[in-house]
Length: 219
Image 1 (cartoon, rainbow, N blue to C red):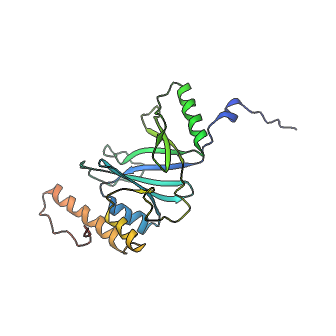
Image 2: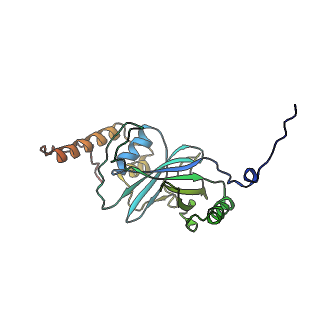
């Protein structure tokens, strides 16, 4: 029996997706996040963006694949933990999902495809090391499609590279990395636990205890 391969128009015109560019989450403490992801998990800090409104730090989990965090200025966010897959109305940590494309032509092609389908999509936004378009899915989930103009994955980071490390006021953990190339062990967990305890004391009306020395490293 001979099987004839049939090619549909979609098979030759679909975008050349190449994985997840980055998953963007939200943190209320970027310093503790750097110490945990870079220092504990070994997910290398790959790039940073900093503006007066927010910080945006990227951690490498494989070729072309990162997890990124936003830390917003002047916005009180109360973190919480919940089991995976259990609904919770407080689940607000997720920001958007960014999908990876191989090059600029693919990004233009996707933008045209979205426009032709009647979807609202932004112009191409140049972030320096990545370029992106933004749109939403039918569920209202914010999506981004990006390609690495300068791939920050798969190589070590030059901590003096201002094009990749764009936060003009980096957190103490990044200043440690710039100064010594490493993070002091044990600080991530102590800072995380100490801050959570302090928040619980305030929320419950308990007397607030003096912070641990590791909670807020000297600047």
